[in-house]
Image 1 (tube, protein in one colour):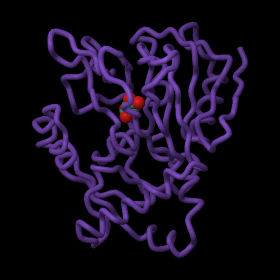
Image 2 (cartoon, protein in one colour):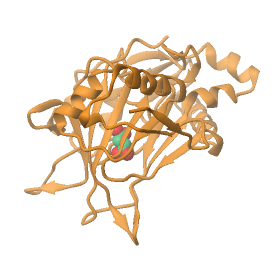
Image 3 (tube, rainbow, N blue to C red):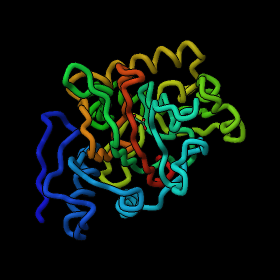
Length: 281
Ligand code: SIN
C-alpha cells in the first residue's frame, strides 16, 4: 500500500489516501503519516472501519495515551477513548455534548498538554442531504508566520495562565467537580513545535485566563485580537465529516472549534483518543 497526500489548499487539513488502518499500517507508511502530521498540523484518513481496540492501537503509535479528566464520558471498558456526542440514553448524555465550543487546543490546562488527538466518526448528522456538525481547524504556525515582526517580538516574551477550573466553571455539564483538584498552569504564549521547530501561537478561549501582566480586560482583548488573526481564512480548514473519518490534529500547531449547527434528533457520535505530549517551551 502506498500513502498519498491530497492537499486541501489550506496550510492544514490534507487527506491521506491509501491507508487501511484495520488491516495494518507498515512502519514506512506510518512514518509518512507522522511526518505529514508534524509538518501540516491536521491530516485525515477517510473510510476507516475501526474497533475501539484498533483506534487505540493506531493512536499508540504516536505515543502514550491519556484519559480525559471528565471520567464519566470515557467509553466503558476503554479508558483511552473519550466519547464526544449529543446522544442521550436513559435521559443521560453518553458523551461530552459540547466539546470544542470555543477555539482551543486540547487540554492547554495541563502541564504537559497532549501531542495530538485522533477523532473517529461513528455517526454524522445530516440535513437537506448534506453532512453538518463540521469541525473548523486553524494553523497556529502559519498564523504566527503571518504576524508583523513587532507583534512577534512582543508576544514571544509573554506567558499565559491556563485554568481548567475557570473553564469548567463556565460549563453546564457538571464538570466543576472533576476540575477542582487541577491546578492552573503557565505556558508560553508562543511555543516551539517539538518536531518541526516552528513557532506556534498557544492559547485557548475560555481556558487562557491571564496573559503577562495584563488585567482581565487587557487579556480578553489580546485574546480576541489573536483569535481574530489566527482564524483568518488563509490559515483555516473546515472538515465536513463522513462516517469512518479519522482526523488527526496536532495540539501545538493547530487549534479547532466544533460547529454546533445540529441538535437531536440529529445524532453525532465520535470517539477521541489523546496522545501524551511534552511541556511547552
Ligand atoms: C474536540 O474538540 O475534541 C471535538 C471536536 C468536535 O467534536 O468536532
